Image (cartoon, rainbow, N blue to C red):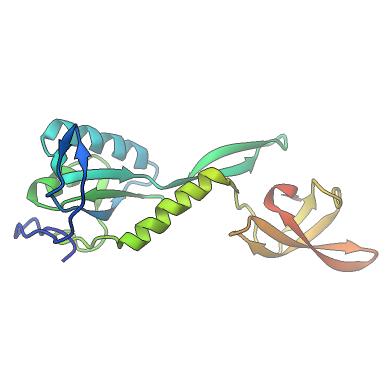
Amino acid sequence: MAGENPETGRGTDTEDTVELGGEDYSEIPKKWYAVHTYSGFEDNVKLALEERIASSGLKKYFGDIIVPKEDVIEKNAKGGKKKVKRKFFPGYIFVRMNVNTDSWHLLKGTPKVTGFVGDQLNPMAVDESEMEKIVAQITEGVKRPKAKIEFSKGDSVKITEGPFSGFNGVINDIKPDKSKLEVLVSIFGRATPVELDFTQVERN
């Protein structure tokens, strides 16, 4: 069972050590849950939930709250680059908590929260291995910002940087994990594939 059913009051069997407000709540088991929110209000929900937890006397049932984001490099209208935060699970936050009647109602009563992912009365926890991947993606996104994906296969683009600067071409392949494109460029009358970073081209 993923968490405590708010109707039955039965708990989970996974324990961890969490300290909140200087108190040790190591005996209270918690798991990660995906919580659906209004898209665009994830940060507001996180702040509101943290404030509700702090004033409710229910801190012992809650751990970390995460809005998964990564740094993305995008171009502005003048061709410059800037680093922005991008949510890679828009419409969701992740909450580490013990699900019981009180914590369930506190979370559900938070403005802009629409509910847990899955069964609302007995929500399914997110696997620890999946949360490790999400945290790793957050960390990697901060260390090595990705270029914002604004392209589709077949798009006509102009190369703005590198040895082929000024050439036009057509996107033949997109490699989002590497933030690279394969662009077919006409060189001496032949279509030649050239691998480029997202930031080295712009749409025609």
